[in-house]
Figure 1 (cartoon, each protein chain N blue to C red):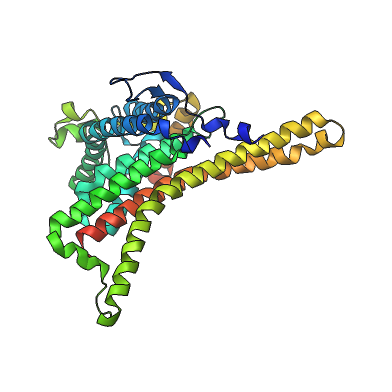
Figure 2 (figure 1 turned 90 degrees about the vertical axis):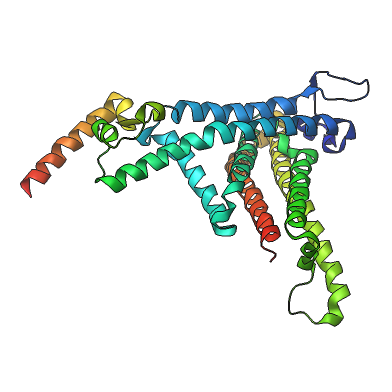
Length: 101
Length: 249
């Protein structure tokens, strides 16, 4: 059974440690801080003023946006034209409903 | 026949590296798939978080969900003082989950199907947790083996049982992962062997070969679930063991 062939143990464990520790380093320095930035920006913007995430709101809040590089688009707008059309339809009709009530 | 079902677990040395003559740290297919798992996660991360949005898209939501859920695992089991263990649990979960999932693709190799990889992880974590307890509590760490409120007559008996169960925790953490992944891959190999032999036999068996094929489809879905659940269970148990050694029971 290949799992029990002892001559392969050293190489597998060595590369496991090397790859795991370098991945741990990447997680600590890059991945976790960048994900946490998005959460904290979101919470800060929500707590100061309503919930409209526009670029002016991001500038007004005095957060260092240049280093954060967090976009304020709705991601579905970047995609296919059909999603953009749906979004525009919803926006148009929601405005009508809001104006009528 | 028995030989071909285990062929998928063979370690093949691709670039032989023998620094001191007998020491063998070659680059094998296991290395390549571990690197692939890390690279694919880094690729998903770098395409979706570096240019992330405040209103997340699909992959960004997935990554945020992974972050939030693993943070909740740590918060529920260790408390907010355990935030310093969060990167460790995050990297363990993502590493094992991606290695398991990539191994389901046909003709690939799952590094976690080898006991040395999972035992290496689980024994390293177990040593770290024991050292953590001994450094924090010095010799009071061994009070963990005699639960409070038990009659003193049973003490020798109880300590032996608790020691055995403690060691069994370390072993089971590694064996659980390796056994689940190996069993799944063996099922794949055996059922696919059935389909092939039935197709070759001809006649009624060729038509009936669709049933093992459907079972293989079902087993694929099951294996994807098992891959993710085993990664979650591994990281959850690691958190519980860290909690046990920080707050003695």
